[in-house]
Image (cartoon, rainbow, N blue to C red; front, side):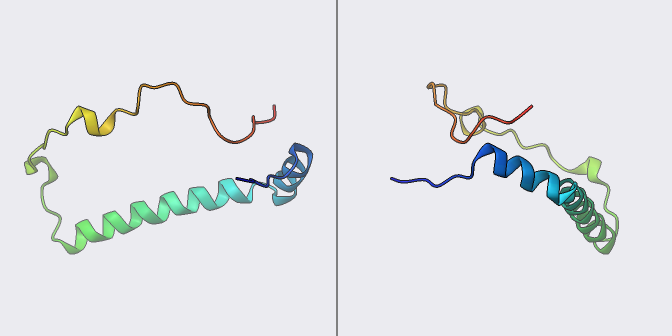
Length: 78
């Protein structure tokens, strides 16, 4: 399978040309998701969340595979 990737120099220049746009958009996305949850809580009548029952999750479903894996992608530049 052929995987096309950009060179490190191109990726770094593109990142710098964006002038922080990725971080700005991530911060806005985090804020908007928080606002969505807060609005849903308000519209639900502000129920007491401490009364929710804590469901135990199965550890097998949240622990990643222990087998050694080779990470895909390129190394981050300094």
